[in-house]
Amino acid sequence: MANRFVLNETSYHGAGAIQEIATEAKGRGFKKAFVCSDPDLVKFGVTDKVLKVLDGAGLPYELYSNIKPNPTIENVQTGVEAYKKSGADYLVAIGGGSSMDTAKAIGIIIENPEFADVVSLEGVAPTKNKSVPIFAVPTTAGTAAEVTINYVITDAAKNRKMVCVDPKDIPVVAFVDPEMMASMPKGLTAATGMDALTHAIEGYITAGAWELSDMFHLKAIEIIARSLRGAVDNTPEGREDMALGQYVAGMGFSNVGLGIVHSMAHPLGALYDTPHGIANAIILPTVMEYNAEATGEKYREIARAMGVEGVDSMSQDEYRKAAIDAVRKLSTDVGIPADLKEIVKREDIPFLAQSAYDDACRPGNPKETSVEDITKLYESLI
Image (cartoon, rainbow, N blue to C red; front, side, top):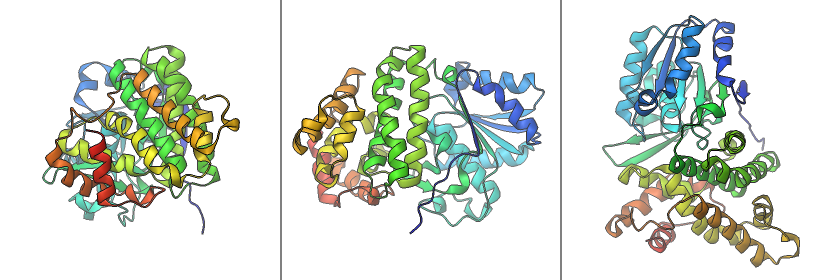
């Protein structure tokens, strides 16, 4: 069996990377951009940093900002109609996962109109044509949507998130500029950073992991573990390292999948609008304990990458505990809540557990699971 790996055609990294948007747009002969960015980024002037680059280069654009934190089918469909009327020939997605996920869905539907209902894109849809070209500019260090083949859209009518996986949606160019992330408040920095760590850890232990993906995930864990606290304190070094760390994690997990941390987090976002990174961060240590028996020696390498010393002299039980403790401490240090008591209502657990079991990320978990097991995991966190 061959292992497939899909990455951006091109990516730019470091302060000032967004200046290359004009170079790439002109070099590719693009005429007009359809810019997707959420209302808060527009309001606080973050989106404007990119618009100034386009203005300075004389590149026309149209701005679309009907995007919710957990983007909905309606957000996508109104975006598709706006794109059709705009005369644009490429997309520029500015933001976190919400803006990029919306742009990916719009770009796929424009070139594959038979999927205009959006619902039919769930899972691995049989699309035939590549998305409209996407330039991706992350403003958070977490989702790595700029380098992944995944996107998540909320079906508000059913209170559920649809995970869509399509190699045809990957942005052609990513501009990973830490200066675009400097205005993130502490809470969002912490949440998105723990999302990135979850990507790296789940990607490292997922059933589809192999040597090439392991290389990316271990390096991502190392970078995130050493830099997230600094990023939360808004140090330039912390911001730059986290921008890289989350991208490296994305290079890996996009190609091998995730596990039930994400499966359990997705329904919380759909039902309660819980920020995805916070949900992941709270659930991650508990699921690591649950999965430990199915991970061989991998927790030793996670502990090492997290900065734990002396792992080679530890027993298997000791290094597994050390890895989990290191993750839990980092989460606590950056201000993530310890449990789901303020989020989950006990009467909703049957719905949450079934939704998590049905989620597209669940089959990648290293340990076979069941609705009953997931129910117990939720119950242990409230």
